[in-house]
Structures are given as C-alpha cells and as structure tokens.
Image (cartoon, rainbow over all chains, first blue to last red; front, side, top):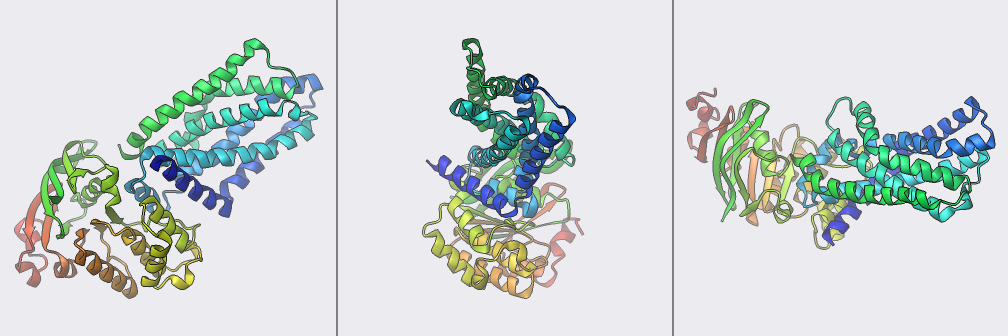
Length: 226
Length: 232
C-alpha cells in the first residue's frame, strides 16, 4: 500500500511538473508529427506499401519521441539536488522508479494518441478498425519502452553525454518489444485479423513487461544508491 | 540507544579513500559539528548517514537501524548544498509533496504552519522559480524540518544565507533541539558552530582525527583543533 501510494505521489509530481512546463511533451509531439509529415513527403507509397510499413514507422516514431521524454525523467531531478532529497526520503527506490515509469508511460501515451490521427490522415489508414487490440498493443509496448527507458534514465542521469547515451543504451534492449509491437501494429492498422501464429507476439510483449519490470524494481535501488 | 553509530566505515572513490575506518558514536539530543578541510570526507560521511551512498566497509546504524531502512529515512531531515525543491511547483505544493512522502499527519495544516513560520504564507501559491534566493532558502529549511526529524543532517547550512534565513534556521534548530533532535552539522564557521555544538569531530583525509566534547580552547581560538592535529 505504501509502495503504491508513494509511486502515485511521485507520478503526480512528475506529471504536474511536466504539464506545467510541457518541455518534453511539446518536443516529443512536435518530433513525432514532423517525422510523420516528412516521411509522407519523402515517399509516396501505395496503399499496400503503407500497410506493410505502418507498424515499423509508427513504433520508430514512438521510440524516438519517447527518448525525449525519458531523457528528462531523472534529469529534472538533478536541478537543486532534488534526486538526493527524494532518495533520502522514505520512498523506496522501487517506488520512485515505478512512479516515474507511470508518469513517463502516461506522457508517451499522450504522444501516441496525438500521433495516430495524424498518421491516419497522412497515410490514409483507418487505424481504428481493431481499437481494443490496438489499444492493448499500445499499452503493453509503451510500458516496455517506458520501463527500459526509465531505468536507463536513472543510470545515465549523472553522465555528461546522457542525451546521447540514453538512446544508444535503450534501443538495443527494446528490440524484442519493438519487433512485437511493429508486427502487431502492422496487422491491426491494416485491418487484418491477428493470425493464430502471431499471438505469440502478444505473449512476448506481456513476458517482456513482466520480466523487465521485475528486474527494474529489484535493481533500481542499486542504481540509485550503489 | 545511540542516534548515530559508525563502526570502521570506509568509502573509496576508485582507489581514493574518501573515508578510512571511521568509528563514531553520537547520543540522542547531541549536536555534532563536523569539521575538516575541503576533501576531508565530510560530505561523503553525511551522504552515507543520509542513505544516499553505501560504505564499502563497516557498519552504519542510525537510531538503531540500517541507514536505508524506511523508518530510518522517515526520521532523518537533510539540508544540503542544493535546496531540494522543484522550480515548477509552488511553495505549498513542494511542502505537500515532501510531507506526503514522509507520511506527515495533517500535512496541509503542517505545511501552512511552516509557510507562516518562514514568512512565505503570502506567496504559498507562487512557483519556486519566481522566488528570490532568500525565499528559496527559507522554503528549503521548511522542507527539511517539516516532518520533525529525529536526526538532522546539515551541510554548511549557514553558508550564503541572508540574515532572515539565518534567523529562520536558527529558530528551527533551537526548536528541534528542544524536542530532543540530534544534529550533525558540517561547517567552516567554527565560532558560530561552537555556540550550538555539544561535540566536535574533525576529519582529515578520510580519517577521524578527533571526536569528543567541544574543546574549550576553540571558544578563544577556532583554529586550535586543526592546529594540534596538523591540519592547519
């Protein structure tokens, strides 16, 4: 109970700070929309080609836009030594991590919800044909991106080149989750049913989330305190 | 029970020994002035006591428990070099945040009491980023003392404070000591520290050179302890 309460307090603080300044949210949304617009100018794909690249394009945009949000997650705590005060408080490292991950996940979901209609308009895709399954993919894959990104945000917070190091470290770790998200999103925005053999990608996403969330909760105290 | 008990605590940064087998015992209600030249290991020691860093060797007990125990951290207040406040939140929001994290009862009322004590009640809804340096410092004092900690860890608390902030901090420290709180204070302002300190510890290159009652000689000659331990 204390864990969840502390996590929600930290998440509320992060969301309040971010929604007040909109520093990383504006940057991430702008970045996502600019990439979608530029890509639509750069290539003029047929409907069939668009269906094939939809998942890959969307998740690359979400992953890169996500890095802008994740980079700020622990970096905002360095001003005024706020991270020291948080770590010295009765909040456990795990609760601190979970609260920050919840806030990052919410912000990334906002970016995705703004990007999807833009994607639908520019690429003439009806992404809302299987809304529940697509929502499940977004929820699970965004959590995967968030968990990896939040842990590495804590790990790189004191590095001088953290803006560069974070993407270099997180993208290789995210490959399994991104592959699953890309495959499932391609099927779902193309209006296809998910074939029986592709349900394994859902199981992979769920497994990835459980394993990496458990690892992060167990190890983050070491990352923060040593 | 000791407020703070360190048993042969060592900490290394790479090969550099920041603390070397420091053993120290401090009773509850004491006020310790932690002295030493720059690089002596004072801040490293304070970070270990605050649970921000773990020693490689030795044992740290605070109020009878491990430094990272949740109950220990709830009983410790820290005022370091940074103010530990969020610029995008208002004064009241900052105090409510930390009050909730520390499980303070009637947190809203307590936060408003501290805002009044620090003369920030009229700007409670203003964002910290709009505050002057003195206002930030007073709010930082309120943040550190809000949960009535049993152990206060202060890293050069009076350095670069304005007169009003010094008064606020001195009053907060007097109140804390009158309710039995233990204070560990890093300071270079020895004369001022001697007025409050019941004990003194001197660190030199990571070693504890002296720990004991405040020497009378230091009242007259603040550099006396440094000199007799070859740290002048």
